[in-house]
Length: 411
View 1 (spheres, helix red, strand yellow):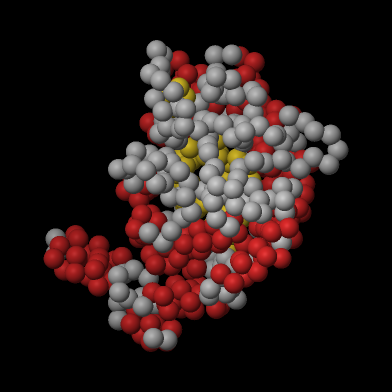
View 2 (spheres, one colour):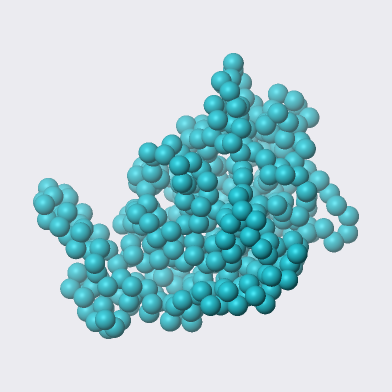
């Protein structure tokens, strides 16, 4: 079937594919840099900590800022549409002398700003509160050690200032996400104390002035981590409550909940009460294992919820996963393309017609229509989108060629 035939099929459902393809030009996905080097960063040789783990030892991991930028360019060339760069603070580039995380300045990210501006993209940012000697007893912003707590408070304050620098330089809003790994392996004696200290730390951080039209501070929860199985300070209840009370934006990571919870169901609840919602798209397998995003039911359902409620301009979409067992360029390309693919799939769904059937309790017809939609010629519209974006339909050979020309030479 050709695109024109697919277009006609969708017209019968009241879907204008040309309008959909125009909308896709505006869909911006923030692409995480840490897929390219297994979350190592450039400011420490510490092993990953804080419940984070990468598995596999595939050839060609980026070892320097230049290699990481080169690899991201290779991935970006195979990903259609608008993109942002998503950085962790551990990816600071030190040209003169090294400084610790509580002394970071905008100048340490100058090369990333140059990179983003050359590619006409914005930058999102994340304080890095893991893989560092000042993570004491698995605690950072909730630590009872005041020196530890103040170290991380200063780090996050500086990250807000750096985020505003990014926004000023690129002309795009910077989403700065706070996530902490704090927790306990076994049942704690005191659950309230760490959370009250975390709350106090956030209050101190957010007391500094910053331009809220340029920097969107978000707060991310987690259900547990490796070595932190029994208690997580920044639970969903804590982060959602703090965000609502203090006027910042909640961030949903669809690997950070119990296995039977789904973020797709949470999106509409959050949109009732929040002007903006942030999203990290990943794929958990049995636990928060950060697998490459697939074009699977939950990814499609998340994007359906965003599109059906006309919230594409209210949700900050970003990716967050890291697979070291396969070609890292392929992991980027596969995951981000699937996020875009799920958005397109949602845009090609007649949500108003489905809602009408639901509201009129015509549930038999609703189910029948939902099932019929699964065999609509979506693939033809996706391929037309790729052609218009001048991106290869099948990126496999380009990825393998890059591996042979570049990655195999990294020892």
